[in-house]
View (spheres, rainbow, N blue to C red):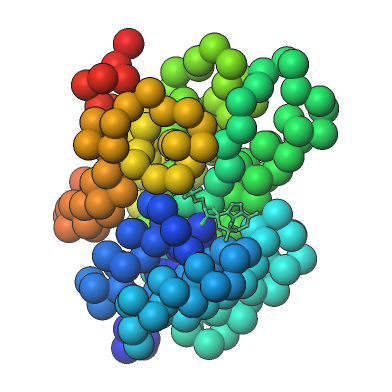
Length: 233
Ligand SMILES: NC(=O)c1ccc[n+]([C@@H]2O[C@H](COP(=O)([O-])OP(=O)(O)OC[C@H]3O[C@@H](n4cnc5c(N)ncnc54)[C@H](OP(=O)(O)O)[C@@H]3O)[C@@H](O)[C@H]2O)c1
């Protein structure tokens, strides 16, 4: 029997992932902060304190993902929450070179598949767990000039919904989170037309997770779409 529950959060060095990692650690989860930028991860871990562990990992590195998840399971005894949050954005649809389209899918979809491939069997053996897949409103609605990103996020929503149907009967919950513009570096880099206070805040994503974790075992939520009034069209 494990003493403490373990949460793995990808892209935890900044933005939405950092806020979720801080929130889960405050709820008492031993929180593993995954990302490539070690300094960002260490800064976030320092804010959290003893509940945090840094795991420098490129989620597109398939063998490294396999090894990392196995190590976490052997050290912590299992994984209670996976937050598949890491992702990238750049503009472009069919104007993109093939390699750029492939990079988008590799980072925003294939890497999540790799993590799920390792974590789902662990949760099946536990007969418990919660998987949050941070997709996007762009995974529900396509938009001009963002075809590659939307394709990757529609893919993640589809994978998440399939796992929702497969795993909920086994006691493992799965929810896709689909926010519109969120007030992080990614939104500014992508050229958001919104002011910071007009955007969804990273804390809203953590509060959504906190709410979902409080629901009774029979209450399953497939996806949560968060929109800000200025970006609904
Ligand atoms: N901001 C928005 O408007 C918005 C809206 C809807 C959905 N989202 C989604 O929300 C998630 C978080 O985005 P954010 O807004 O917090 O963006 P962000 O501030 O740019 O953070 C992205 C995170 O992903 C990590 N990451 C990227 N590639 C990685 C890789 N190959 N391996 C490991 N980590 C990687 C980055 O860490 P390292 O650089 O350290 O690796 C970083 O921590 C993304 O999936 C994004 O698509 C964002």
